[in-house]
Length: 146
Image (cartoon, one colour):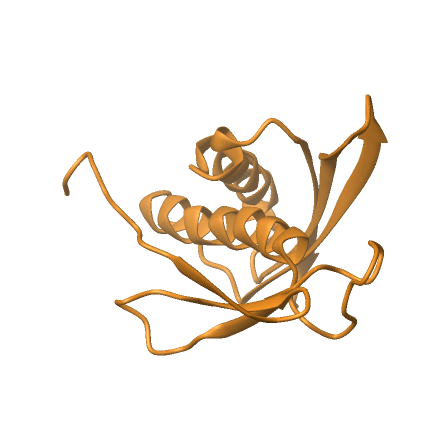
């Protein structure tokens, strides 16, 4: 695998405070808008804030898949919920914190410690979480299916 990668994303304004994001290598386009918390924001449309939180959440999940495979951790399900906290300080808004609740279901209770270590390693090795200044708090929950 190469050490350098490139991802192209295009944005085009459509109307008001809305636009479309796309990539030449992807078929799906996503409508984006200013969130309704801000002046002239639009409800029910993905915002940059949603996409930012989604990037962290999905990257940690994908990193988990790789580390779990390398660690030979068997799991039955992975679910996560992320909440980003936006605060204003010094006249600028910042995503200061992302709380990530990960619910992992495994069959073998003896694998619980290993599962927690894999989740911890996933956040520490996620390229997106390593690229942002927001504090990321991971709250894992291990469920034993039997």
